[in-house]
Image 1 (tube, rainbow, N blue to C red):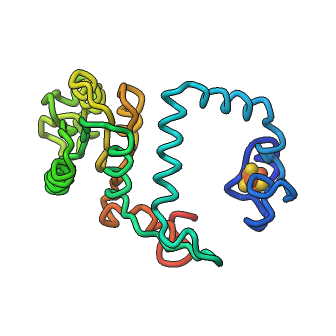
Image 2: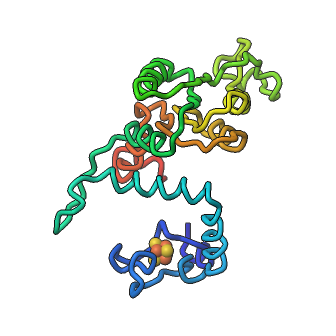
Length: 229
Ligand code: SF4
């Protein structure tokens, strides 16, 4: 995107300041064009008020404690970042901190083997796991007006991914916390929109990179340059 097109809105992703000199991290630091730390004072206040809700406050507090606990040797000086918790550890430790007992696992059919292992891990940590696969409900893609040539396999009756149903099942089962595993782009969005409980993501789907979408991003200057062209 041209610089002129993003001049008036928040553009942290292209902030030109060194990390140690960013005003969001260092009060004496500098702001970039469109910096939300200096231009969105009212929104900062509005967001801060949300944390006054005791439920949000506790959720945010525990998430922040979990964030710090993902590093070891925090009392060493100088401190050198040394992460020690994998994502799945981060999830079950956070859920334990929150006192949750029932985890909802919404997963993609393409990751059913992984879902069984994840279920086993959560159960091992004392959680009750309610899981729903994306195709559960068995509803045809016809109800969302998918034409035959828009199917994965034209000529076949295809069952739709049904993230709204996944969310509703977990809502009905009153899960405390939901975990997404490999839902497609857009299907995950519908799940987030329709789930009652807070949701985190264990892994996102990337059909080409073994569910590591950043592989294409890391390689975008050379072997995957096609995504920038
Ligand atoms: S908040 Fe401001 S200083 Fe911080 S990354 Fe965004 S643009 Fe840069």
